[in-house]
Length: 428
Ligand code: PMP
Image (tube, rainbow, N blue to C red; front, side, top):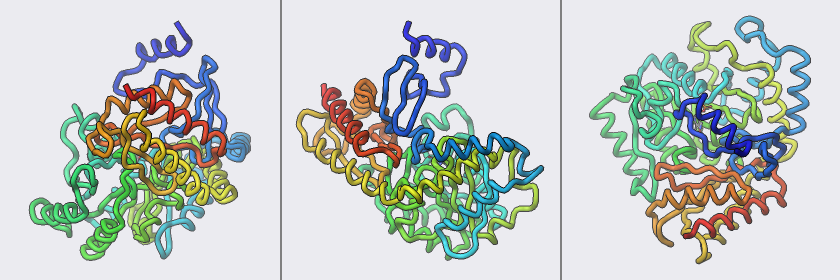
């Protein structure tokens, strides 16, 4: 048995199938945009640990900051003894907040925890129970965030009823025949049939749906949601967990629309591989929660805060906002080239702001019909070529590209060439 196979057999025996693995590949080490597995195979990482590694694996500045923090202290619990790195991360996030006026921030560990707390804050600030989310959206796997997530299989199946007060609207998507007008109409129906707008605390939206298929929220929709929120005293929450920290060519995805949210959830690429998440919000809203209402034993770990401070420096020093746009342009040009070839599986709808790029694998050239089986073949063929890719999307036929924004042109070109070969060999 190979090393990967024997580890996978141990994994199967020790760990439940409920946590699925994209690949039975076990890393030995990783650097920048490359991973080497326990058998010495080398892969170019176009998955970034699900959008966590905008600054790449083990960025030297992040490693040095973490090493310094490890020599000082690793844990006190911020609620017991507060520490400067936590304050500094919040100061930096407040300065970056994609809205005008004073901001405050609070830190946690996981994305789901950030979303849970954004909802708690919105409910405390408004005194209202309702929350509106979107079909196809993903906000996490805890009970509340699972309820907010707009996809039943696999996230809600077998987990019983959702907590009350959560409502979903259709998300505009051309291939599903949903327009912005349809979404607005559904919201009008919701306000007549299920909940008065004055009972709604928040509307939560991903500026670009991540797991849902890299679908940008049309600016027209965000503007309409902002107007509805202003009219009825509802808070607008931007879930920036996947779109954040330079991925879309802006620090936060919603900045591409000019619409200002009231609360922002952040995680993933904030700390370059260390578990850190947070909620950034308008100061007056953030201060409505009573002392002790927010927190967590590990929330805002000093080690993760040290990493985040270095990540924020690297984004600026290496001009990753600009780099995301350049990389996105190169990736889209390569994908548009593949789309015109006859010897590859049919692909369509190359899209996404900055370097948050995806495309669909479809049944026929020029069509919309999803081909999830061919998508799986492409991803497996890509692994065999040496590039790690992830799928997403409600039809299981979207391939997303989440390479580090620090990737060199040479590695990007090599990874894209591997993807091109995979698209050809999956064309059976
Ligand atoms: N929100 C969004 C937009 C996400 O993409 C994710 C993770 N994919 C989450 C929330 C949940 O984050 P976590 O897995 O860290 O709980």
